[in-house]
Length: 74
Image (cartoon, rainbow, N blue to C red):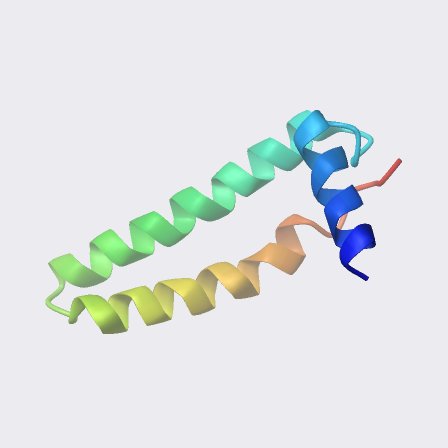
């Protein structure tokens, strides 16, 4: 199990895990920016930072399957 995870990490870092690494990085950036914007907006609205981080993590986690549904592996 550990060797499979390690192999996948090495392939990802080398850019050989996905058929189109640029699309992966773009969608990953979209998820990160979305979560960061949610944190910023919620803290500006007066929500405590811990609650804003919790809600942002939940929203970002729910967004990932939608963003990564069309990815193809090699």
